[in-house]
Length: 148
Image 1 (cartoon, rainbow, N blue to C red):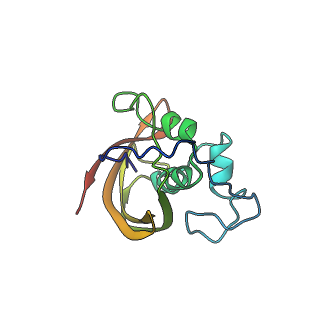
Image 2 (image 1 turned 90 degrees about the vertical axis):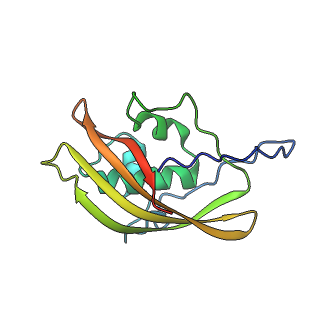
């Protein structure tokens, strides 16, 4: 997921604290596991076995505002210098719509998804097809095409 807001950032005077996800809370990615058993272990350093697992963990990194993880799992050729989080935006759900390749036996893969969010309380969604590649034996996010 590559969502970086294209509109001017709103100044709130103080930085909003990053949302916290408790280790025993349901994982924001939507799989039936706790955060610690699912995306939390990837955020802590475990490698994603598939591009779908990486996609889910990157979505969750946006939820918990883990910029270091997002940058670490972004291909160096397309990685931005920083990730900015919009303080008015809250990610509310992820739907995986299609996966092409991206297994432990592939070197490339795509994940088409819809990520739901609210922006200052207004619901919206991001529909994207993300491309993942193996880089130094790990899955990384490479590019995206916005479907809508």
